[in-house]
Image (cartoon, rainbow, N blue to C red; front, side, top):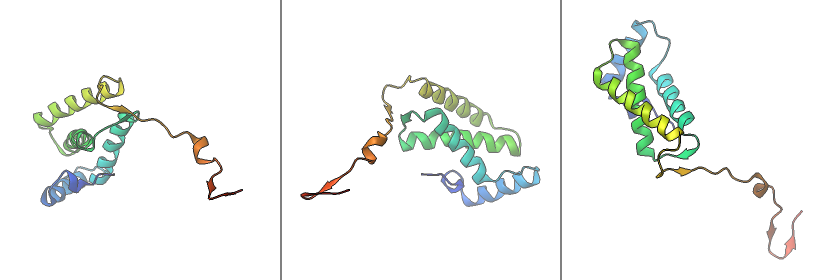
Length: 123
């Protein structure tokens, strides 16, 4: 499920951050930043099934860091959570979390097998 800026920011905060991005000369929108950071999490964790709450926490940390990096000084708390999220993503990528299930691709031959319904063979 794709995230939206409303998943991370209140309406008034979205407005002020969007204005700050434009005034700072950035061509990025809040949505594009959210999409990029969501894709980053997907890239690191593509092999594993990540719990939606964990995924949202990781994306949030990356989004806050990226937004504040573009609009002004990055608060220390966002730098710390970004660094922790990146370490966790690297550990996920490297398979250091035994609680994560490995995604197994569906065998393509299963989808193209001829089916039988009832007693007559279908071609």
